[in-house]
Length: 81
Image (cartoon, rainbow, N blue to C red; front, top):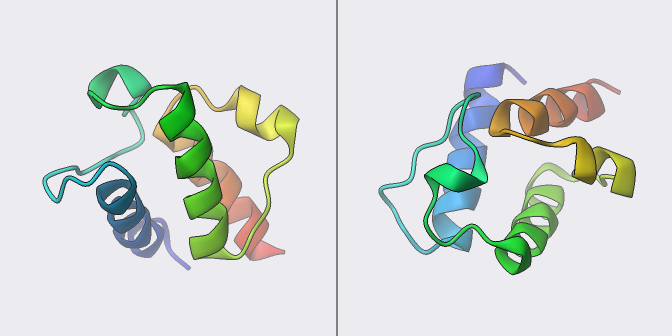
């Protein structure tokens, strides 16, 4: 899976979780950039991403994600296995 293909899927996940079809994320996107992205929605987002990509994040990985690019790096690494 290319980074572009993964972002197509990830954008759909963000749009569904935050119920906003206008959301488009990139490597630099952070929680500060999306109005409803709070700690509860972060948990919902992680679960939705795991389900969409068929992966599991450990707690260390979840806490290390500071921006969407960090999440994408982990998604691609886990899908390469």
